[in-house]
Amino acid sequence: MSPHTRFFAALLFLLAAALPLRAQSGAAALSDMCVGGQASAPIRIEVFSDFQCPACRAFFLDTIRPLLAGYARENKVCVVFHDFPLQMHTYARAASQYAAAARRLGLEQWVRVTEALYTDQPQWAEDGKLDPVVARVLSPEDMARVRKLIADPAISQAVDQEVALAARRQVRVTPTFFVFANGREQRVEGSLSYPILKDYLDRLLR
Amino acid sequence: MMRAILHWACRLFLAAVFIYSGYTKVDNPLQFAVAIEGYKLLPPGMVLWVVKTLPWFEIALGIALLAGIALRYTAALAGALLAFFIVIMAITYLRGIEASCGCFGLGEPISPLTLLRDAAFMLPALFLAVRPRIEARLMPSRRR
Image 1 (cartoon, chains in turn brown, orange):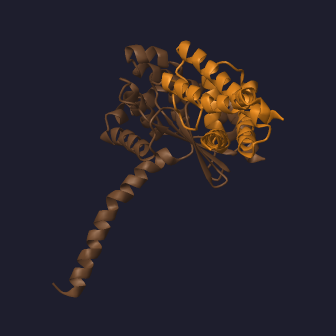
Image 2 (cartoon, chains in turn yellow, orange):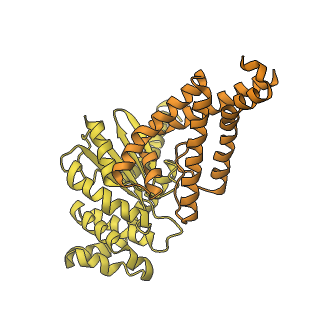
């Protein structure tokens, strides 16, 4: 084998090794995007949440929802939302798959599905009937697409990637959220009420 | 000599506990706020007030202990504060609320162990608060 052939073989090998990484980062990019606000916002909040965890329900409905409607809409905050279904919760992974499928349709669909899943959590956490909850907030066409997407292994892989990301970030409990501002990261475990988070954000934005 | 070493050990230990505890809260005020809210005793306005004042009060108390400013009284205040923490934690634990104690940063749940630890922290505070009185009673000549 000539030196040229060896060089090109090595180059090909490196390219082949880099391709799965690129594909992986491309798939993860959707979950890294802001669900409220833009990446240019001065504050970034990354949330790791489980659809079946009651504290996550309170955190989403009472804190994240007003945050999305206020600070995120004004582009003061970028909110990134990661699903982290805990193994102890029977239906959490299925709920994450519905949300991941809705995310493929668009942000608006994701918001509607996420709100519905958290609002009706006490009910579906008992009976596991997720499909009617999601169907109630989507158009029949979108629901058909969601049902099709759920059967796609890519959706399951997307949830796996979120779980892997949570492991890499050493997330142990839900909800856990990270606040990035002024070049500093603050890790917070547990649910926090909106007035307190708002006061903190106002001080950061001052 | 031994009593002097014990006196300094108690002062340094207690000062370190309060300064470190205050520092972790100042460093991550949101985590401290999560812990205070978890006790389900205070409205959000009061939680904010505690989050903003208590860590600095702890740091100031630690510095006062280290510097020996009105030592008997600062030690008594430290003991009273620890007793207050123990009562609040015990009430929350007995109510069956799974809250983080908020003692030293990230989520440490309230348990008999955290209660015992705070009770152990009270010993050096009591020693520093009571020792001068005992010594004064035992050795009245030294008061002159």
